[in-house]
Image (tube, rainbow, N blue to C red; front, top):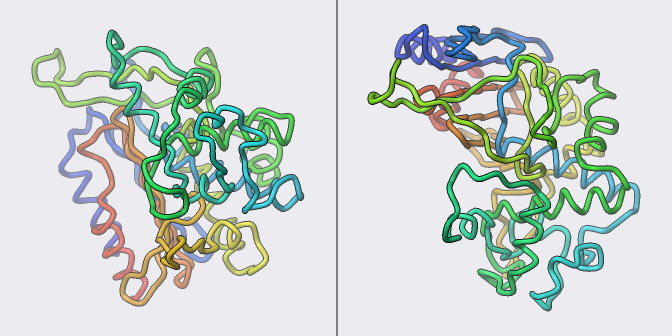
Length: 338
């Protein structure tokens, strides 16, 4: 199989006793293979496995969007409703923001990371959470582009969505996702880390190569508990469950998944690839649905070829083991033909 060859080559390029990756392929509702190479913890010499809980970074956005769409379906809010009634943090912008503009990154609200990095006296390891970021957003007053006129990826949108889920449902996003989204599917270990003191079983540590340090690696110490834009820890085993459900929903036009994939034209009629926490493109005549994530040395990617009922999951805890979207898709397409 081309995908197995792709991952075997990646495995051969990495040291056995360094950080690495987990990969899995699902087809027709069944796990075809999974591969785990390297260490979840270099200090404790714990190998990566199907249960290793990686930080999913922006891969988490699809789950945040799914929670938001569940509330839309309950009639709590509409996609074209102005969210400012629930988010006073946006008052200084003095304009409306339709819900869909947060979901598809067309609000024009700047990404908070740029403002964190610009703060004098701030160190990159300083801790931050949703409360601090909401306070920061509350001080902004200018959009980067007219709302709904252009696509501008911004993590601020999904911090605001996390707050919106809580204010509409009365539950923090982590609890809402657990009770409404994950546990009904038997997914008891996948979830948002919204408390820096939480214990997460099988938590993976991430690393950067650093020849100047003992053993040649620098360990990342996560400095945030933001949820919405990121925040989920998940294993290959749990994500395989999600992918089986994903393809079941693809076969149902009335499903939550198809609500996530509905197009939202810009003011000029253009339809962007980014929908609600997911992107959809065409390759070799097939739909390819995906989202990726990367932060603190973690690299994550889930790619779906729905016409072939195929999903590929790759989770890495160092940059050298991170996913290559185009190579992964090419290998998957080759396998789908055979």
